[in-house]
Length: 153
Image (cartoon, rainbow, N blue to C red):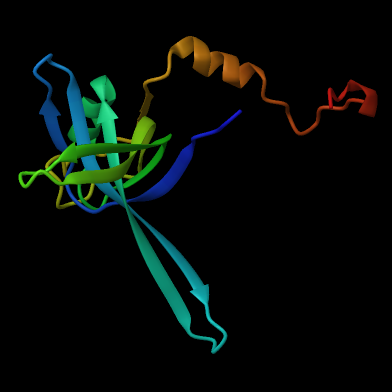
């Protein structure tokens, strides 16, 4: 068994870039920054920012291009993917990116984005609605009571 799952909450470092494949499929690329803050042994506040390459396909790609902009916060789920290609000199190049399956647009649009006058807070998932509904059905409420014999492990 294996798991390849990524969950990120961060801010876009650039406006999304939407392209279409020769077959007509939409693909959107953007970078997302996540920042970790801590206090070191000397009591000084430290901060480290990680940049993540994000790739989104299909209708979700078009929505990301429409509603996301540099500085906008987004919450996404997906998986890690590494791809390779040969550069102009014939050297093998690699990149690791997040292939997003769900993106939630957090807060309003930023004043600098192309859709600055819109304040849209929406989410869209590429997962089939049946899968989303079945996931919700298996959530257990905090007030559920069951005996130890009911636990399957």
